[in-house]
Amino acid sequence: MRKEVESERRDTSLCKGTTSPAKGTSHHRPTAPKKKLRNVRTMNRFKKPNVIPPELENITEDELQEYREAFRLFDKDGNGTITTKELGIAMRSLGQNPTEQELMDMINEVDIDGSGTIEFAEFCQMMKRMNKENDSEMIREAFRVFDRDGNGFITAQEFRYFMTHMGEQFTDEEVDEIIREVDIDGDGQINYEEFVQMMTRK
Image (tube, rainbow, N blue to C red; front, side, top):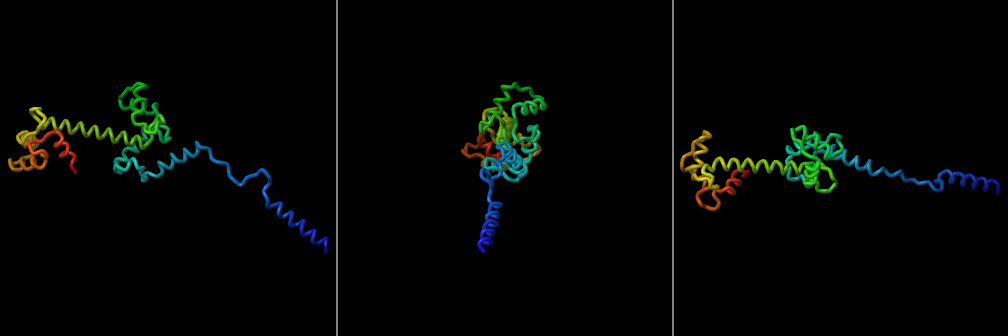
């Protein structure tokens, strides 16, 4: 009887030994290198084009698609960032010939996180600002066309003259009504600030 009990104890001990991990071993898997994690984050960013970061919320879906296509043209190696070298290649393909310092200045101007490269969100902000600057220049040009005598104001006569030459016929009453609608300060003519509001009104 004693031999049977001892035999059972040995069997139990052997079973426990097979399930217990050896000393110095660990159940945890090796941690993935930080570089691989960064690559995964970069890949995810482009695999989910509908996820818009908070800093891009003021950009429309059409603009975002346009910027994404442009970004891929700049980002030659597809790693999710634009370097000075990649920016230089893109600029030269557009007929520009910037120096290395000019390229660095361009990147530093929009490099919010100080990484030395342009990421997609920073690229979008840069493109948005460039579009605004282009829009502002177009509005200034339009104002100069309306303001025939260059005194900084558009009178009813100047407004009617321009619209007539554009093929639009307005009566005096219609011109006066438009002027009144746009003329915030009530001086009977349109200054530049009022013109900008008229042109950008949605």
